Length: 251
Image (cartoon, rainbow, N blue to C red; front, side, top):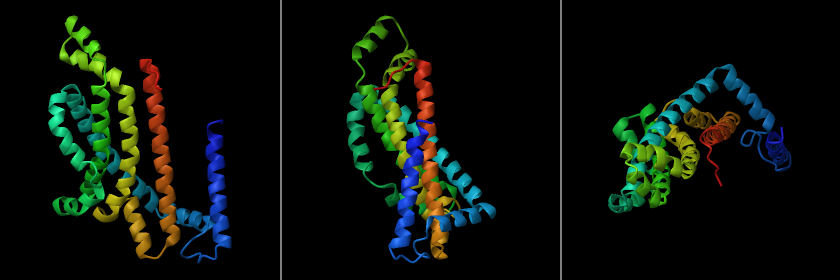
């Protein structure tokens, strides 16, 4: 309850400010709907089954793209973080590609893969890959090399060095990259669906805009925000569970 109180109070204040803005700001309710209108639009989407279908499609694309980015980013990050001589050649390329927004890739992604699930998955992959890769490289490169020397002296194989020393030592910092990647990927899944898909929450926003339904548009925005909050909270719980299981204390 102590953790829930700040969330409840924060959302209550936000909704109150929103309601006051619609009442005193002189805005057209059609263009800036009040909370009750948005709630009504949300009920309409639920009743017609559109909202559930959109949420499922977006979540499936999000998790496919994110899991692929996590797998590749973590694997390459562990390798490059351990073999820094190789990373010196790869780092300039990564730093060149990293600032390019995933949105900038959308025209090419749509041309290469067409309209459907794949463009949104690719955009999520791009958005999540670089935070995971760079954070993992940084975490592994900062491990005390004395640990690795001791492990070699005891005859540990490279596999055991990675699994028993490198990953546990770097894990608290690696999860930071995973956490950042979740937020970034969830932002861009919506953008990817607005251009490269014909379903999902991003497409729902486009469809509501084209039909001049600001209530449905804002309802979709509310759902996107709530899902993003829920995903972040769930990741935090999983993170704490893993820390407790491994006896890791994060600063």
